Amino acid sequence: RAKQEGRQGYQFFTQEMQSRSVRNLQIVNALRQAQQLNQLQVYYQPQVSIADGQIIGAEALLRWWHPELGSVSPAEFIPIAEDSRLILSIGEWVIRQAVRQAKDWMKQGFAPLIMAVNLSAVQFRHHDLPALVSRILTEENLPPECLELELTEGVAMHNPQGAIAIMNNLHARGVRMSIDDFGTGYSSLSYLKKFKSYKLKIDQSFVRDINTDVEDKAIVSAIISLAKSLGLKTIAEGVETHDQLSFLKEQGCDEMQGYLISKPLPSDQFEALLNTYRSPSS
Ligand code: C2E
Ligand code: MG
Ligand code: MG
Ligand code: MG
Image (cartoon, rainbow, N blue to C red):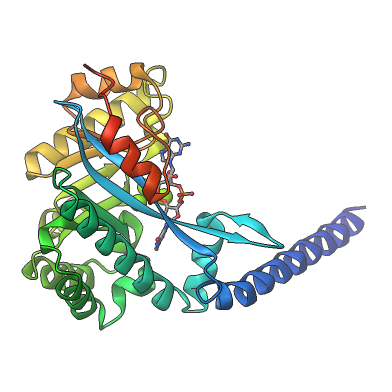
């Protein structure tokens, strides 16, 4: 009986593996053409200062719509783009779009925004990244301090010595760095101190039940005091309710991002939001 179960288990495993790799293959093939076929779009989600409720930044988030696959989540296609190294050309395109958009909003006379762009592991470790970022900023004529690059805690801590060198290089070029999904990796505090980062992004998994779960409360307030003692800013991800916001405000969190303010939006809708925005705390 045990044998039979084992065999069935094995069969199930291979079938699941197979359909997953079929889907992955479909995605890689479709993704190869996505750029040329204009299927990719960058959305922007506002980042808001908790103290005064103003929109002070935007996170660029990639969207992909394919005629047969429909809308595919970046959580699914980014890892596949990483494995196939397609992320290098796609990622370069995202940085270019986001920087160009930030410049456009600046030219239109909106209050200066900091544009945050996600970096994947492959992009971050690619030898050309710092020069590429400088080149794009120069070509699009955007001051480097208007760009912030988000690196997940997991990627930063995977090889902390290497990460420090790359962050120093980007920092020297005037670009800001933030540590994304903070709290989900295993940070060594001694490295965290050496990272040239500016901001910790508190992962949304801790924010979700912040008003009811005592452990999440404790984790979030610990992250905020850790950041304060290291001279870093904090931003909470995934803020959806006023109760979450009140707790974060009470704890001294600097910024927030989430559906309470807005979902990620196409650039024209983000622009409309900039024109009509009223902060939720006023
Ligand atoms: P992330 O950088 O941690 O982005 C935050 C995710 O949370 C986004 O999902 C965003 O849409 C979602 N979110 C924002 N506010 C709320 C909220 O109030 N509630 C909930 N439930 N979710 C919220 P999205 O856009 O699906 O992106 C998922 C991940 O894919 C990102 O996580 C990032 O790691 C990756 N990604 C997205 N765009 C890019 C890109 O251009 N380059 C790279 N390398 N990765 C990207
Ligand atoms: Mg991010
Ligand atoms: Mg995140
Ligand atoms: Mg994430």
